[in-house]
Length: 120
Image 1 (cartoon, one colour):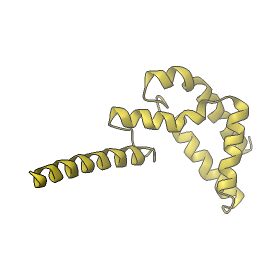
Image 2: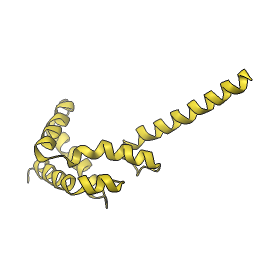
Image 3: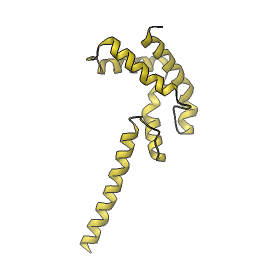
Image 4: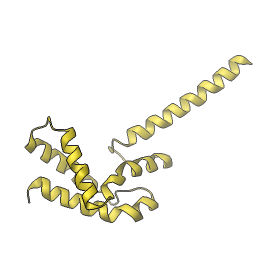
C-alpha cells in the first residue's frame, strides 16, 4: 500500500514538473505554445508589450540596462530582430482575452521601439 501511494505521488509530481517545464520553455517564444495553460502563461509574459507607451519605454530601458554588457550596435540590431519577430506573427497573443486587450497597443509599441532601435 505504501509503495502504491509513493508511486502515485511520484507520478503526479513528475506530471506537474513536466507541465511546469513546458510553461517555462514556452516563454522562450521559439514556437507557439501547445498547451492551453502554456498559452496563457506566454500571454501573461508578453502582456508588457501592450502596456501604455510610458510603461513600455521604461520596460525597454530596463531591458537595455539588463544587457548593458552588450555593445550598443549589437544590442540594437538583435533587439530589433526580436521585436520584429513578434510583429511578424499573425497575432502576438494566443488567447482572446489578451488579444482583445493588448494586441493593438503591443503592435504600436513594437513598431515605435523598432524605429528607435533602427534609428529611423
